[in-house]
Image (cartoon, rainbow, N blue to C red; front, side, top):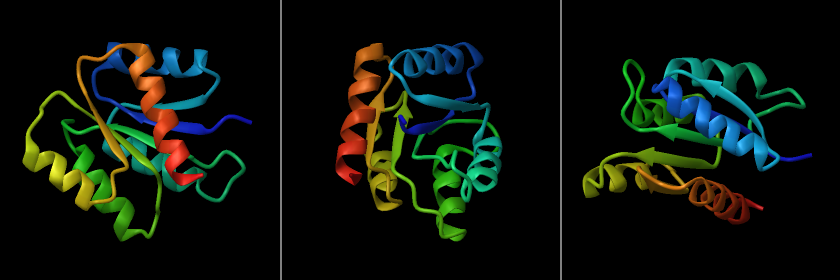
Amino acid sequence: MKTHILLAEDAEQTRMTFTTVMQAAGYEVTPAKDGLEALQQIVALKDTPRKIGILITDIRMDGLDGLALLDELAKRGIKLPVLAITGFSDKDVVIELMRRGCSEYIEKPFEAWELIESVERVLKKVS
């Protein structure tokens, strides 16, 4: 069984595209429109056979953004491999991501194969 991915991305078209790409690569994907929806899904699925194996999250989202989502997971003691997506190459943001346990990040724009390779690198780190 392939890893279950939770994809938190506020831009609907981007979320749909990333979901399609990852499903085509054989992953089960649960999309979330923001950090709050992502948190709810992660909590709801954490003790089930469909638990989330990796979180892909955009950093800049309305409401609960990617950094705040990582903080909320930490508060709840939920540890997940995380691939952050950012449209900004701000070194301070990258440092904060790593400090909060992010496994890897990828900068927009990127190709579908780059997303798949990034997910596979993150999964290799934790296997």
